[in-house]
Amino acid sequence: MSVIKDVIAKVKQTDPHQPEFHQAVEEVMGTLEPTVKKHPEFVKANIYERIVEPERAMQFRVPWVDDKGCVRVNRGFRIQFNNAIGPFKGGLRFHPSVNLGIIKFLGFEQIFKNALTTLPMGGAKGGSDFDPKGKSDGEVMRFCQAFMRELFRHIGADIDVPAGDIGVGGREIGYLYGYYKKIRNEHTGVLTGKGLDYGGSLVRPEATGYGVTYFAAEMLATRGLNFKGKTVAISGAGNVAQYAVEKVNQLGGKVISLCDSSATIIDEKGIDDKKCCYVLDLKNVRRGRIAEYADKFKTACYEGKNVWDVIREQGIKVDIALPCATQNEINDKNAAALVKNGCICVAEGANMPSTPEAIKIFQEKKILYGPGKAANAGGVATSGLEMSQNSLRFSWTREEVDNRLLIIMKSIHKNCSDTAEAYGKKGDYVTGANIAGFTKVANAMLAYGVV
Image 1: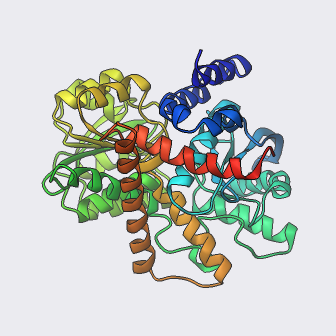
Image 2: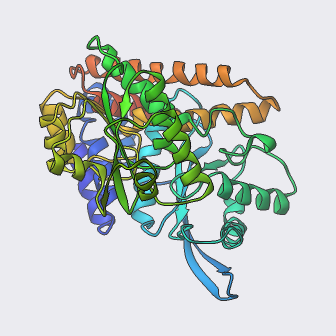
């Protein structure tokens, strides 16, 4: 077998019950075959096998007390995957689906995503199977404090800098950072996504949603196209989806969909700025369900279905798809339906939202396809900018941060495009993103020797 196939086989053998991690490794490693011949030094130093092994993986017990005085127990995780180019950096996810395999897949993807930003950040991820939905603020606070009682010993501004992810928004970051500050007696840039009053950055909440839209705009421009007059489908209803809607509106597109775990809404008239503000209040303040949007604006609502299932079943025309919910939300049937219904561009705002079979369809049909590690890197890029501001003890203006984000997303697009072409895969953003991210990290690992 080839070096690449050997590595994939070993991962499956040593971690047999981690399908999401297998998928991530196969997706990345499967595109790295051209680097084997071009970089024999990587083979000699066994970089390929070393990069799929995390530096360390922590799993810990998180006991906390609910509002009824009952002791509850959840599992906590932090995977510090690779810090070759900078401190470990990656979000925390609080969701019932969280397990070791999911955190490993997210941490592995984070290595290459962070490398693409050009900022000095390594790859990590963490979280818990705790579900903040339906919990009181007091319960969420007590859980976050219990979680930080263990996590604090593994993180630091120059060691590992967590951020938010699914289930971890401004409220959770505030509780986590407040407790870290208390027990460490220091005010430092150890978490990103903080509130503006205590070290956060302007545009950080918007960054992933803005970034995926900027990346999609760059892809469209390669074919002389833009967002003006285009019908856009967006999945999710959280932070990423909300601000993707806002930026699409600014660029002249019309967003017709959002969803959460309970339902999908389809608004053929478009989710304009006024409706978008309603969604922000609904999800971020009142913490309601997206079905309430349908009641408010008298639109179609499909209980228990995601956006892509609805588009397939209803035959809804879509020009651009921005999946911003969770992993593997677009399967092969959904991908085929998107293509049939006129989709010309897919940019991933979530981590690995398209299955391998769906990606194959997009690529075979010559659809513009931006993988998450490139298209949704705007969030972590702006986290990196927040880290810089914390180190400087200084805050940049909204315009400056947004401009830096736009420059970074343009740079990521160019890097992916140029790398793909250099390796004989012109227009293949998957190959371009994977090889560009990998070679940067691999060169750093090579420079350190065997450590």
